[in-house]
Image (cartoon, rainbow, N blue to C red; front, top):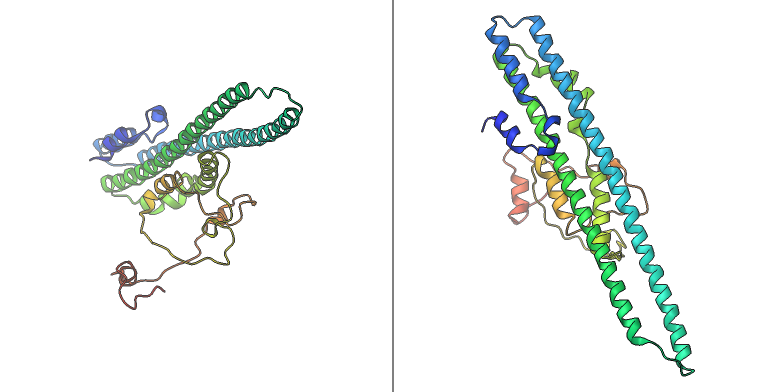
Length: 295
């Protein structure tokens, strides 16, 4: 499939006007060639359009990231209020229960039928709130996924149009495009981990109704009795964000210090494995060959 068609069929409809105008750049190259020699003036015009598109995409991505961060923050506040309200309600119910027991000892009617009905309504209302929050977080996860795809698609589009430019004009813009233009607007380098960690924590709180599992060594708790048992997979970098967002729906991101605000350095690579072009060491570990080792 040609990329012009791919970008038109893969884009998120609500953001249609904010994608790379690949067709415009493609037509510019064609018209420039039809006029004969590709002049310096024509080249400058092409670069100006490229920079205009880069500014548009960098700005849109930044605004959507800020919007997502604010929506996640609001959801965190809602979850916190719900958890605190639930705890307060538990305390009030316990105090009422104690008073009822004391009153019953003096022959007073406990009104148990009315209390049972009220408790049932309270539990249903609380569950409705949790369900609403779960839907809110699911939408946030989907929006982060869409923005990551937006970033990937536009970056691919820039690289393809520059490659087409070089092929049709005989010039070599690709050699300097990343250094001189993309690096000044590095939208394609955005690290999604900070948003993913926040979403993971939110999803875990909502899924467990405010009572996440604590203290398990596999979830960053006490490591003294930790037994290493891992399964490794190779994931294409283009699919990494999508995979993380899928996993967090079922398993929270491993955070060793949940009391510390997440920083990008926390997701840095800590292990590098060496291999040859045939991936002998990797395949040996995957196939569990006797004596296989990782370096």
